Image 1 (cartoon, rainbow, N blue to C red):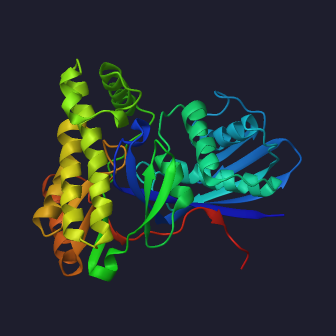
Image 2 (cartoon, rainbow, N blue to C red):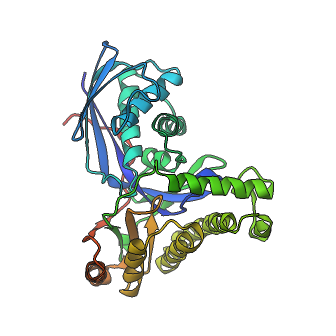
Image 3 (spheres, one colour):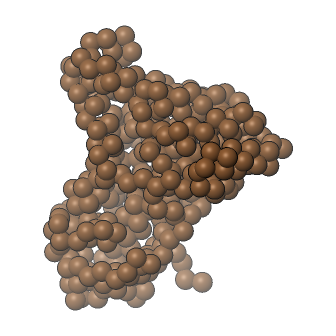
Length: 360
């Protein structure tokens, strides 16, 4: 029995670094996806092949046994076993067109595709929130990247022409229509080609800063805080990080309201404000990303912002269709003149979430 299962990358329309603060985010699933082809057996050993090489792991693997790209696969195996699911051995082949290190959540796409294939092999059905927790545990505790649930939920709940309003305190996912092309607006995805790594110290530093700010305010998470209380935070850097989270949560809700009336001009303004907050308060953009976002806005985009964890990756822009070529040319020109690598620019859209691939 050969199983094929896929899961998408994602972009976050707005709501950055809010997930682990029990806040709000608004992601979409992307057309690009990771596909797992799995032939299970009773060997108790998984052989996994990808463009990065071949890896072998026992189904009783423990954190530290496997490193590198294969750790994401081993982490899912480990987390499933910890959840009481019996995982088979077998051969697994992984292919993907989700760019790695671009802020499109290639790791969650891999985790959710592997998870879906393994669950299908053993005939176990788990609800999508539980699957997201298992995939997150793989990344947090096996790989060692302290990410929130945003990426996994986006990969699992995605749907065409639909964004997802995620409330991380209540762990609810509400569909929000997102189809700008019907209003003559293009969603442009601009890959800076500057790569980042979540397991690095910057992400951990931001998370720790938010935790200190919440402790200073006497609340469990920044979701329970308000702007008036920021003066009680001891460290001024922590206070700025907290201000980003609080204002970003409100921008997410304002964005949802604007989408309800297809007011893409207001959505764009919120994106631009979000980028400024990530730059000035949360400190996760770079001069390279700032240049791309600023150039897109000056050339006619309704708004632009970095998407993802920061320090590299992609910028998204909402652009009236008639300005799409002008914005692209301006970004290519200004980025090239600044000496950065030539970006990759595509028009994209909200696509389906994780699921099995039927035989042709």
